[in-house]
Amino acid sequence: MTSTVAERPGRKVGSFLHRHPRLRLAGLLSAPVLWLVVAYLGALAVLLISAFWSVNTFTGDLVKVFSLDNFRTLVTEEVYRRVALRSLGVAAAVTVICVVLAVPMAFFMAKVASPRSRKWLVIAILTPLWASYLVKAYAWRVLLANGGPIDWLLGGPGNGPGYGLFAVILVLSYLWLPYMILPIYAGLERLPDSMLEASADLGARAGRTFRAIVLPILVPSIFAGSIFTFSLSLGDYITVQIVGGKTQLLGNLVYANIGAANNLPFAAAIATVPVLIMVIYLVAVRRSGALEEL
Image (cartoon, rainbow, N blue to C red; front, side, top):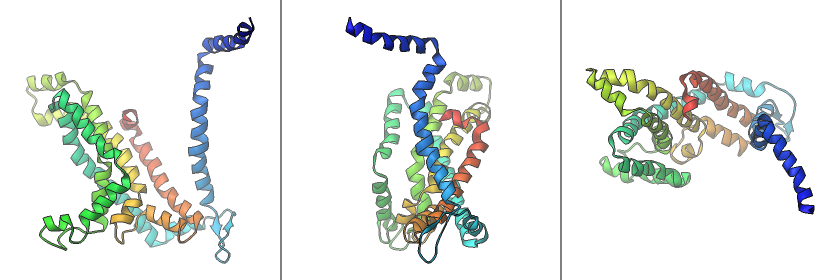
């Protein structure tokens, strides 16, 4: 009888929540939403606030007084504008390379390969993601080293690309390629084969079929993949440290100002640049339906 009495409040709460589905949904979402607000949005808020602080040049202490000096330096100093444009160019180049490589691979997986082979191809695409980021980056450092395997393939020491901007783009394209293949593959897999067959039966050529049927499915998937490749390349600094040589990107500047320079406010100001770029990019691609493909 005691257990029955103890179960009544629980039953009452369960009945109440059953009658109020919106309240039940709010209860289920409260924990993850709270985590999102505190851990993610809270961290971004702290980042933005600290970007308006400064560092005392004599003592090295934080000066928690509102100031636009950090952002003024980013805008007026040519070196920071050049680094920002270079970072933007690297992210765009990586995204374009990933698209060029991913589209034929994803199309083969979705429309040409047999169902059994398709599963193994998906596993092959996912397998590199299970390996450590650092292991893959340092493997490319060995490949691109002076006198390394790539130099040997191209005819001898000094004939390879070596370390630098090209190496950064090459390695980032390799690292993020699966993030472009998978959304495109998922989009093409939803495209019925009957539509392609009907287009061919009606006399449409391959180019016409691609523009009228495949491309409308492909574009949102490409934008969805580009959100990953573009953002990950824009904020990366480890690959640049490993194979970039003297190349400087936004991520390197953030890392340098947090470490050796010990200028956290200026590092936060630099970090707001890729965040702002990604917000603008997400707003721009929202109408393409890319967010629904994620």
